[in-house]
Image 1 (cartoon, one colour):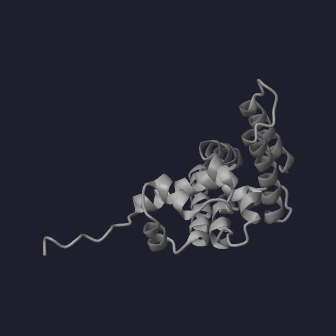
Image 2 (cartoon, helix red, strand yellow):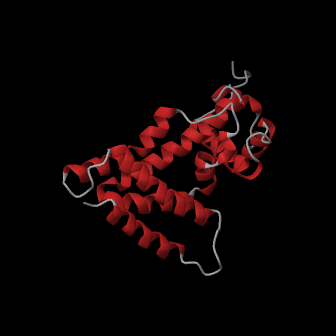
Image 3 (cartoon, one colour):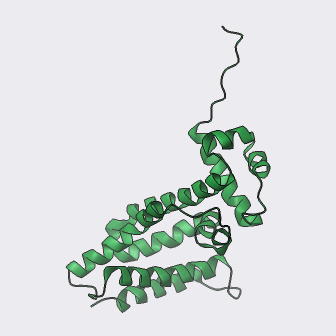
Length: 194
């Protein structure tokens, strides 16, 4: 009995490492060019681990996108008590700490790869803190009474655009992104105030 080989354990640590390597590779190479062999080499494991944990490449890519939305959603929920400004600040901080995941989630590379898209419920859940903050502001009479989804999407688009520009380094040397973002975030909140 002692001579029998132990089964290979594909645990949460390996799963997370595979997701992180996948996000980095897709960010650098694009989803169509990333192979399972590339991922397993980067994660120092075998393709058996991917098949065991995810099923295949399309499922691995979907899991990587979903993992990004889950992580992003957790950061948003943690900041939700501070209102719209805190949510906006948390949005930028998360994106700067996870640039590969951010581009994976919101970039055009995945949209062009037909076998992969985020799970709608996971993506929607990540944006729920913003929708709830807008609804709370409207209930308190401090935000415009437009449709909640309209206001939330307008706010999201504005902060997303600024963060995307910063990550793409669309600036001149010495650009104060933190200052620009903070001033713009305050202007966005004022624009939707009542």
